[in-house]
Length: 147
View (tube, rainbow, N blue to C red):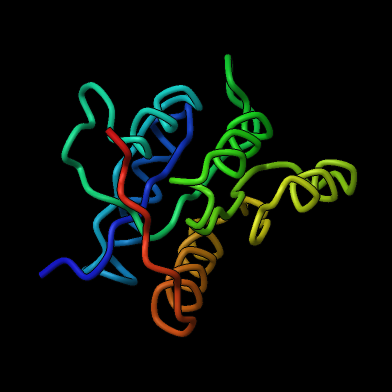
């Protein structure tokens, strides 16, 4: 039984596979969807084209460094669109730059996590994300895509 859906936005398939494995270990009732770009993320959240009928996600996990629409611009679009603006967005990126972190929060990120180098720490961070955002806090009802 799936209790919640997460959208991972990351251009690196290996990161997706590691994220999937971490979810299987820590939260087997959470289903994740993966898109490789900010443009795809926006279509997914709007439930457009190939993503029609996918249903709303409870959480977006977003990488910053992607070609095309990067994580900052994706976050800006999510926060600027009423039907998407209420979904929590967590940045999960290799950056530790205070400038990037400050910019992410100023654009409306709910949290910023740096990607660790060890698999053990990676799994722990995914566990904390899921536990906090999908088990402890009360989230708003997702808005339905407007047609």
